[in-house]
Length: 422
Image (cartoon, rainbow, N blue to C red; front, side, top):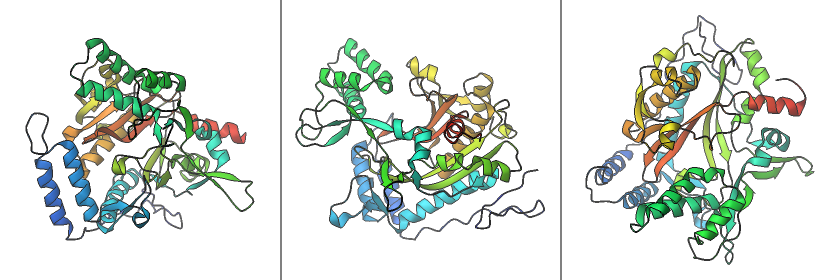
């Protein structure tokens, strides 16, 4: 029997006879949002669809929406009176209301509905934790610098933007060069610093703002470093994800759950990434809110008792075989994707289905939502399978949710570090 566990300050759970929690009451947005919503809908109608005409380009639509949201105080650049800081934003009253509603619905849909164990862990994390998880050594992006101004850019983004721009806008492009650019895009995540640098030089890619030459790529760690306490002897970082707080508490959570698997732990909180070149508005920022779930399951039995609730869902999926063959996403029934081996196991498939329901009930257009499987060069070495929920917007297809079977990599990594089995 499922007993809903609600985490409170007393960490108490209701008895089996207690009624389940009622749905959370969502905040009512201010009445001033109505004209803003009507204005945004009117602007959206003017954007050309895939097969039709419109009066406004995607770029113009994005600029108009951003202008409207900033004027209505949904969000504004942080510290604006001092010139602002790239990648940092403040939410105003309507933005806070929208964010609170989304998080309340997420908690209702996942944490309460599934009886998950919610935790709240510190943002400041000791270095030893992130050393064990691999973040200190591997949480890096390759960066290049404008050799005259010192401005920094992500090397892979510059190469990707160059190739995409050539493929989309250069009508004189030969089939051979088009094939090469597509090949570079396919292997982009596998390129070393030396290979990235060679391509940047070969294609004569320059700094986008100044057209100055660029340095060779070199690794840059994306974590904000800090010192815990006044001595300077306890280094730490602002967490780049919330998951590690769950992993280091696994043993206590397992005990709290009656020493039984499966169980899931969830956390909502701030995460920090010192992005090299923040852009795309709220899509790439240096501080943001994450809502994460870690579901712990018996590795010998990855079935899910509630998979039947989502097995008949049909939506756009983009398996790796279709991507590698140059085909488009197709509509697949979730149950078939499991039986045919497209999705690795029922538990992973169940959460893909639950994420689909969450996003569509939130209002995401079903035809602008797809689940894309990671290509072999994207997969972490420890992952059994990984899918991203991607939403099409004016920037193209953007990853919004990652759903992965991480095996027991994190628990093993921490067990090795502390020399004690978790």
